[in-house]
Length: 250
Image (cartoon, rainbow, N blue to C red; front, side, top):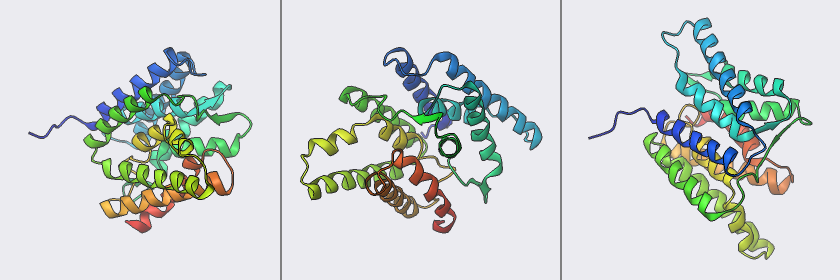
């Protein structure tokens, strides 16, 4: 029998566990008070938008996922920017739409927006998870549950395969030891990106072939940003740009 439980509950559980583990075990540079501020802001904005757009009911699940995701990716020392990022995340879901779908992944759009307009105050802690294999396998396992329930495992696995091909192919071409790309693949931020951002069903192509093509474009764009332009956060920049191609792919 097919489970009817909304896959968003699985994602909320996974992101909540990861966030708690990061704050209380890994000691992220993110306090639980800041998380409460982010999540509270996303929920309040979701409620306000529900009233303005006259939706039949307030849905906390999507806003909670956005709040948890934003807490995992975004870093700043200014509380007002945290609130602004939360508001932008939710507003983008209601305003940046195309044929019933999000034009951008809301969290990705918000983070990139803040990086563009507040580059001195906003950053993404790519190395906050470390490279411990235990943590990596834990994140992969929980992420697999989420993407399976949301039927988006194809785009996640395709992206990881393309990204691994780029990393290992570059190291082979450069004559680097294989420990370097393997070390890069163990990054927690890559796993979070693959399982909880690029797999968003509301902002990815409808067909399987389209999703695989989309994952290849995102991986190629990220590789160009990271190794061609020598800029950080290549995955986030590439995903934001490639989202504009989704209507064409569909």
